[in-house]
Image 1: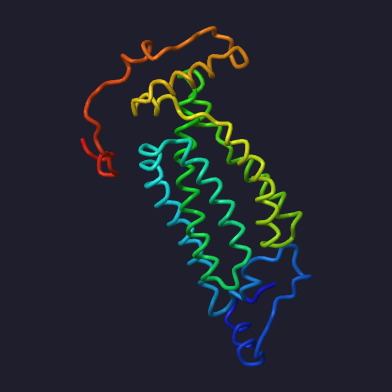
Image 2: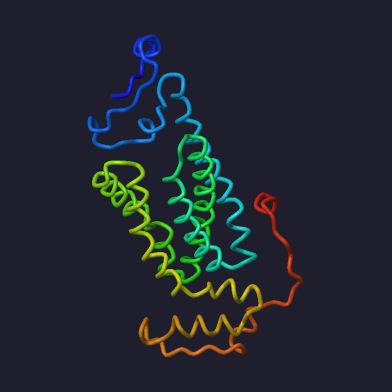
Length: 237
């Protein structure tokens, strides 16, 4: 167990020129053990958490605007791919600063795809099922999965490796996603919006026997001048 009180830290400073963690004595080798984040460096753990939370906050703010201007699918898939890359980069960290920097970028990307994915999924569904997408998100399943991976891998580096082995096939599957029809209509891409709507209405999904043309949805699209919305407009009356 890592020393957490002043007496233990004082003893280490007085009697030890260097020290390493006994990795066989714990069930999971954490960052604290590998980077020796104890005693005078114990506060570095909180700094890592702050950087991660800050990256996620900034990403969630900017991600909404990125999805609005570049497309939900583009931002979602790109973010997922970059998250896998940055997660694997984390395993090569040799100190807490490098790890915190990479995880700051990783959490920024997570914030981006968090708001983009929820928006995209809700825009796929109608009013009847939209509440399901908003309230039955995948977090509980993710928490159970990562807890199992942590229990089996026994170390933070192996944890990241196997976590990405699980998520990589899912990311490839995300390539099959279609762009949000609402976003396509809002940006004036009516032909592509019709393709998506007709795919959703196909008999392999719900067999509604509906077929949409650009003429059917042209009345939805307004030819008003496009405005560039910012974070300020969320609070504007």
